[in-house]
Image 1 (cartoon, rainbow, N blue to C red):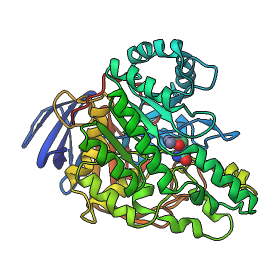
Image 2 (cartoon, rainbow, N blue to C red):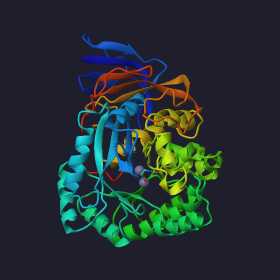
Image 3 (cartoon, rainbow, N blue to C red):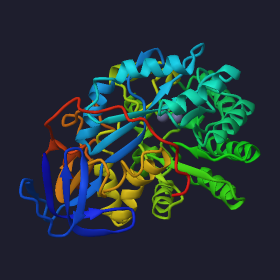
Amino acid sequence: MKIILKNGVVVSGTGTRTADVLIENEKITAVAPNLTCDDAVVRDLSGKMLFPGAIDAHTHLDLEVSDTVTADDFYTGTKAAIRGGTTLVIDFATQNHGETLAEALENWHKKADGKCSCDYAFHMAISEWNENISKEIDDMMRAGVTTFKLYMTYPAMILSDGEIYEVLRRLKEVGSFAGVHCENASVIDAHIRERKAAGLLGPSSHPKVRPDTLEAEAVHRLMTIAGEADAPVMVVHLTNKKALDEIRDAREKGQRVFAETCPQYLVLDEKVYDLDGFESAKYVCSPPIRAKENQQVLWDALAGGQIQTVATDHCSFTLEQKAMGRDDFTKIPNGMPGLETRVDILFSEGVGKGKLTAEQACRVLSENPAKLYGLYPNKGCIAPGSDADLVVIDPRKEKVITAAGQEQNTDYSPFEGLAVKGCVDSVYLRGQLVVHNDKILKEKTGQFIKRGAPQLEL
Ligand code: URP
Ligand code: ZN
Ligand code: ZN
């Protein structure tokens, strides 16, 4: 099957140009003005923009956590992803205590294989560190799981500072790096004890026990550990200026540090925790939503290249699941949905409001994650030889984000009522038109993608 997409504005991380794109089967074979091909189907994209398929490098689908399982599994989550312009998710395969990494990977394949409507890959979240696990790192790299995740918080996942040091050194040997969840677990626990003793058990206690200073302290510690290990590292779901300043300081010392943020930290602020009653449980995620002044800091850092990627940290629960913590905020499952709305929000709030150029949006949504996570240039660019994963954005299309209109399997949206302008019009996954006008035309055509070595120079 051959398709020519005509007259679209083709976006890359370095420029935009009006051009035609020739797709042959799964691949892009030409990008140039005035392309012709006798046996190709022609689709006119005048007035529309063509981005490489967006990559969401931080999702938690079908994850057992907090005595429940996330509302979205790989079937519903990847349908939401593709509808929202994300053609590849990198989910966190997670090692439970006592498991080998091989068992965790097998478990994640069982959850995902045959169910995905966008392409998918895995990072490996390591919850236990010893010599045998260290040996398995080579197996993971061979299996295409070429980046890892570590937690400085959560009892089921936390590694000690020394273990983090050892993991980072080991990953450096194989040309990999870890994304790290940075929060100071011990002081958070002390804050929790204080709030509980004072009878402050509602969801508005959540941000109080996890302040930005405790994120920044953990980022500082991680920078020290990564410096000692002389290893690259990524801070995931960065929320605030103090934490970003720690990264800037480390970079000034010559360290290689990457950072990721998420739409919820760019467009929501801490007032969500002032909502009446239990309403604010919808926004219980870690790290929490921060004070408004952090939003512009994060946008500026995206535009300036100090934050390299925007992912969602999609970890969705229904209101009924959130209600598990009705009498105790520490029992509210942490996380929020976002897979379906990331591209629309970044385009509308970022490009539409002049906070990001189209090229910068392309870098943080697609090109940079493709490079960092060993997918480039198969993914992350519109060029001959690349997979024909494409998102058509209509800059004039408007909609209002609502739970009722979403594919993701939750009964609320953290962005309810947000009007967006400049939305996903259609999506191609390896050459097939899979979404048009908000309708999913083809399901379950996603493939597991074995990733290559990370590219550390962006
Ligand atoms: O609250 C969150 N972010 N839950 C998902 C797990 C994590 O910390 O990334
Ligand atoms: Zn995290
Ligand atoms: Zn996460």
